[in-house]
Image (cartoon, rainbow, N blue to C red):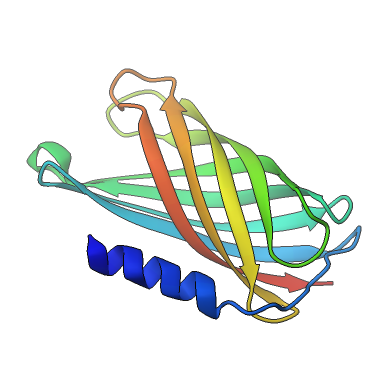
Length: 161
């Protein structure tokens, strides 16, 4: 655990003081993921998304997500689509943000289900077009087969026009 905290703080510190400023109409490619081991059960989350800036502080995303788990001794992979919106507190450079997402998931054991989440994140720019993002939030599923969860994500973001 101490090693994970050290790595997280190191990445936060080395992410320089670059001051990217997304403009209205700017786009981005997001790559996010996490790994969790809870009571011997492993789970993995990965997401790729396109982001569009309505202005320098409001971002809309549309992406694909995959959830994998070996809970209960069986390996399951769930895929789905997601859309969301984020508000960045500062229009320039490193900034905190809040975001929310809506997922439509294809779950093998059940009919398709919907999930929503809300995150508090921090985006730290390495240069004018690349940033690291760290998020912590809560995800709830509208299906009794899946437990709601606290989620911590790590991602890399590439800005382009």
